[in-house]
Image (cartoon, rainbow, N blue to C red; front, top):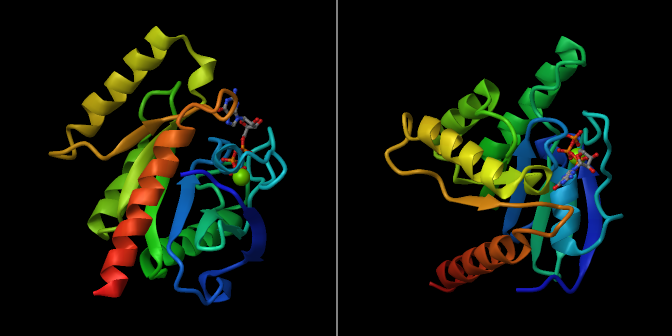
Length: 204
Ligand code: GTP
Ligand code: MG
């Protein structure tokens, strides 16, 4: 699938402010600065669509992008940003947990993980929370261009060894680079497949 049309639709401060819509949506979540907004831009071939920043904490709202007039990409605020007040962290936690648990049209959550780091406690805890709430998620390894192929493979293998201690079956995953456009087709094909499945269910 190719993205022919991608437009910014709205920013919602909380779940209650999200658009009333039956379109399937795919949301991007992960630690601040992991590359959520950059990945959305890469998928849409538009570097100006979602605002990115080298400083963590850039995305503070639930940002909606309407794709090909029939599904949504959603850019969420990052979790675990240490350099903000506790009040702010609590506020984001409520926004994120509300959205992930209660948004009925959420088809899949993409949990972004930095491909250069060992599995971070906060990412493991977040994915365990998703499993406990039966929120469907896939892992997206980001910034794959920043390491050699060998280092990348080694690090992902280590992460998977850690994950295998907690899941019988490893979550679905994608390796991506917003710089090199790695993973573009695989993620869009996955979304296309899900959209088709949702359509079939709607017709039943
Ligand atoms: P918050 O909105 O603050 O939570 O961050 P975010 O997860 O949306 O991250 P963002 O996309 O703003 O990217 C953070 C920084 O990482 C920026 O400086 C990006 O240019 C850089 N970055 C993101 N993805 C990649 C990538 O695949 N490769 C490289 N080399 N840099 C990347
Ligand atoms: Mg962002």
